[in-house]
Length: 487
Image (cartoon, rainbow, N blue to C red):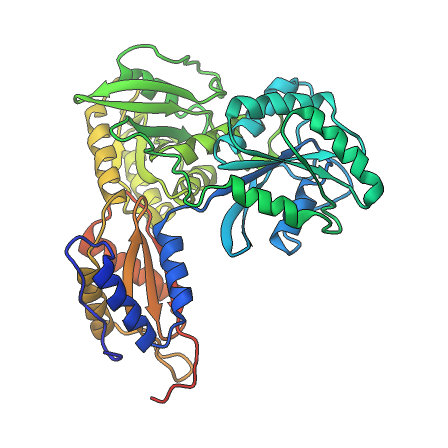
């Protein structure tokens, strides 16, 4: 058994009781720590971990608190407000439970007004979270901005843990107690800088977080599938939505950046109701943006997180840009099904079509698996091909391979294309399983480190064998630690 990949398993691809026991027995034979194996399967199979958003005004110590929760200096901290701009996600653990922590930028009243800044950065950080830690500076007390945030949290209806930060000693306890007035329950007196009181606060966080993560997409069985239209400004996202809808649903203007807020539209196509989300164009890296563009990009990122399929529009009349590639990467990293729509196809001459094909071959080689449609939002050319491409991507996104069939396939790969020998050793894939879908997630157990090139080879062969058209694949490798076993 040690020298060949196990190929047993049921026909449904699920790890049933008998298969799970057999799988764990094999892991034990191969010298793996069974607790680690169980944790890897759980992490991969249960999709995203529960999400905790850390929110508050500028300079109340959110990033310091995030570092305290993580147990390491990860988030950038400076003694001035506004250092954190992007929503940054980290993985944390407390009392044996894993969850994600989202560090957000501070809220303040600026030229756009508090409503704009709160709505843009905060609502979607909170929307995507399962629970919220609201950080208030206890030495300052509740401000008008804090009160505005409280109203937002109440509307969101998410569990909230109130953190009264900068309580460095018993004398600050009275300041913390004053925050009962916010109406969010007990203020946990904490010093993020020194660690005082953070344990009690994290215990409360675990009570607020769900055991199993909430899925932000497909939550309603039989509900409309969510399609996010994303791309650079002025590539025709709003025009495409109007053409698909058959009427003027959203504002279209030649001035780039007309759309600021994501616009949800229920559209019936082919007897199926879809929820299309028109988003603001993403101009450049989020942290280089200012004002309304910055908040619009945050909204767009949140729309992608909530979607099931991202349709990336590319202006076929212009060269594929770094920004196009960055937007595609955002959708792939979010684990969404992907369709690439080349718009303004009706404006291309033969020469431009030739060069576009060359650009696609060189610039987008990493996403050859994504369905492609050549469309014209202005004339309606090939619009009927968009929904079949979306359905193909969704099918790939939800594909599951039976464990037995997967391991037979891995066995053939190991036999025909073994990993190159490095340092006198040849790592082997021992066995594996598909632990989840949406997107497909695989866990491979190996005798040694698998190089990135070999992992890409495995992914390419998986796609050749099983399809997975229109979906990213997530492959994690668990390496057997040396235990002094005799060969």
